[in-house]
Length: 236
Image (cartoon, rainbow, N blue to C red; front, top):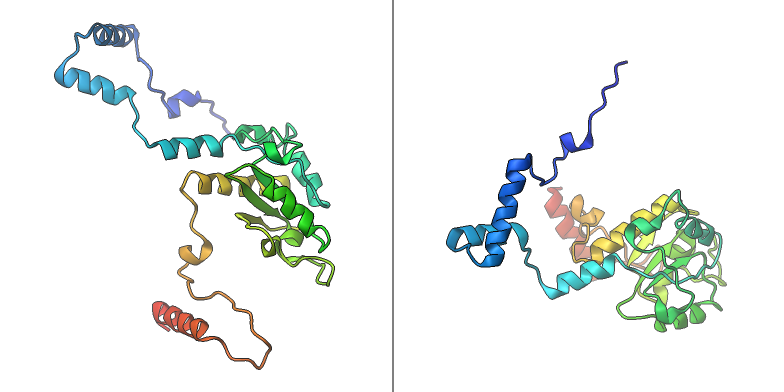
């Protein structure tokens, strides 16, 4: 097996001068711009190369997505996986979220890491209400997302029953990589570019499940109509 080594810059060239002559030319153009000697097309080209235009809302969302302050908050075994995301192996600091805050008044992200008992739900909601606006929530693991293996009267069957959840991370418990992946999904939502769900990717609109009163009950009119439209889209 033959191994070839290449410099990264060969494959991803940066916008840098290729030689002393081009560097000197750029310096002269910058000097002329500062003096006010550039006019017309030369000035327009110089400005277009160096000025980016955006909206204030997009700029704020970009800053928010890359400077999130999670709450130092854990409920069960998923919290151990959450703690490991700040370690050098996973390094959530790459995404600007390494500063876990001990006070909800300094945090804007709640990671619900573990099962939520019925007695604990009001406390979790109070902590969420005390957090800064805008704020977000990640439901980490099967227990916080749907109750997991604890299908009983003492555990809330999904954290979205008592507070809004932005991202669900499946697993029991999910690995730190899965939490980081869900965190990247949340960042995409914050900047206004959310990834499409699997129903949108595969054309499965109308396949949602609705709660029914029993096995012998009839689907609602909305459910039947959505199912019919989905069958028409699929050509079935």
